[in-house]
Length: 157
Image 1 (cartoon, rainbow, N blue to C red):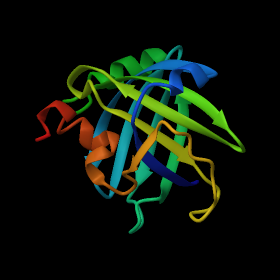
Image 2: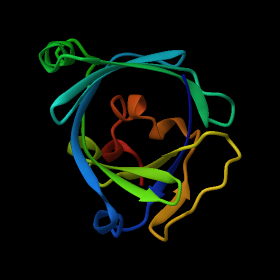
Image 3: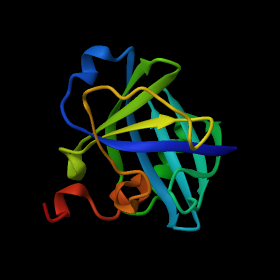
Image 4: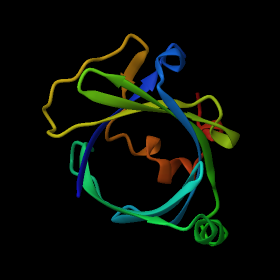
């Protein structure tokens, strides 16, 4: 139940042609406390309740627990979430032994595109496609829970 992932900004949209699947995601947070976040997510026709713990110092690892729930229940829970519901399209791009998940955000986070890769070990090697940009692993402002509170459009660019 420990999630190990690294995050990167995306430089251009060539990843879309490499994607093997894509999903519409709507998600909100019942709790955005840095010690633990509680997320409700609807991903196409499925829904999930997820609890994540605090990240380690490097930002690569943290506890994660997830359970599939009824979509109708998720829709009700979304109404109880803190302000700042996120909407995005997630693209899955297999590369070598890994799969990149690239999130293209909409609404108040329009213009932000983030790639994540889950690893089995913090020091595991992985292939980096040419569309991968600056690494933002551990930069709290790129956490979805933070994007729901301070949207990308409100950042000073």
